[in-house]
Length: 639
Image 1 (cartoon, rainbow, N blue to C red):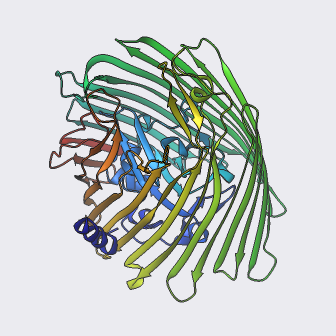
Image 2 (cartoon, rainbow, N blue to C red):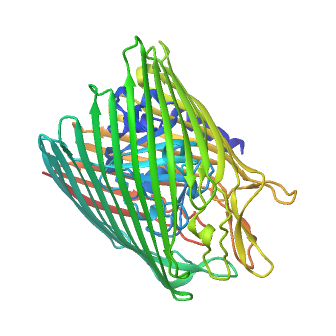
């Protein structure tokens, strides 16, 4: 244990990304914090003015590191634990600060993307293509973002066109395991409009995710994404987004005796459609801003199982929002901004095994305050009331603050708030008829969380370090109880689960083309004790996680090479099998990836990447294999 902590301490001090340093490292050059604007509430703010724990990953960083799945980019973020079931495209869960997978909210271009059957987002479907940036907020965020933002928000923003330009690009690549990929995009705009359209297709033959047999488990993913904005007048703009994903992923079943995966011809097909249309208006010389948006989400899932037959489900979500903000900056060294908003949401769910369509509605009122004082102290607070038509109402609140200490190259930040996670449709209405029974009397899960941190810059910005301590509880936890008649049902537990830990991040910039970044997180997450027993460690949430990334740009900035290492410590997993204990320990592992790119000219660039360079054998989910050494190379043209 001491050796692990010593190594982690060295990683923390020397080589780790801060809350904003990943943006900085993305371009391999220093970036002024004033240039980074994030959405950490109902309104946007400069990153240095936010009191919340934030990480920004830019599309440029994703592209330069040749990352193909958003989940793999999130492995480098403090506080994030990623678990993929088997091959690429398999169920991929993300847990933030020791919380559950359905406690983090995923937004794509302003549209909520979490599945409404089980409440979480499957990152196996999310290819890292055409992304402008990913804004990651950790901690309780339900006041501004709604239910399921209990442990954080992953806000994904795709690329938009630049007005007065027209740019197109094409990319192709091939790799091991029969992997091929092609992508096309075009974007641009005129004086009063802009547009962006992209398409991508990735196929992989995969590898055998089980130790039994020789069947390979592959994946196919096709994604289309588009967005536009048009100025109807100097004060009014209309914009829209549309995203379509169609994928097919091979699956294997787990043996009832050992829980080890074995070869079967199972597969799942998913069709996702997300879209929105919005209108914004500014008045009173920009002091008053109004925004309205309508968004829709549709998911169709089809599952083929040799043992249980075919099944499907349809999930829909519709949102309508309106907000108005007034900013007063006439006072010397002070800025005050008030925002009020309303949100309506309707969700429907149609599972084949229940032969019925379920629905529920929510109405919400939200208020936000922002204050800036003497260009060094920044305050943000909010309150929200949800009126839920199908279960208990909920109220949440939040407050955060940041202080840029004068003449000290130091920024203090802290946040405190409550959050909720709503029951899922499966939990309310059941899953397997006669076996897993729903509970329509469930209440939302509730949480109180806080964090406090300090960000310090050394050597004129050559080293930036951020250290954040976090603590959060969970009450009314929804858990499944198993009855003697072999039926089961979800219930709200008494007591509380607890999560706490430390996130440390830093960037080292040698100002000669060499940049080092990394992250380390210590997480202690325990579930509540049952019948006087001990508290158990939460599964698939390692106590120790870390990452390192080194990038070097040379040859007049035309060539770039990088290497990254992702460390995942030992963690518990749960097993449902007759010959294996119900809880097992998965060994820790370190995976090393390397790659590079070279610009042949202003139009053509070649690139390549090797994952799991040392062919490490490890497990993220008990019973399922993970990829060995894989590689790909490709060509990109921009014109």
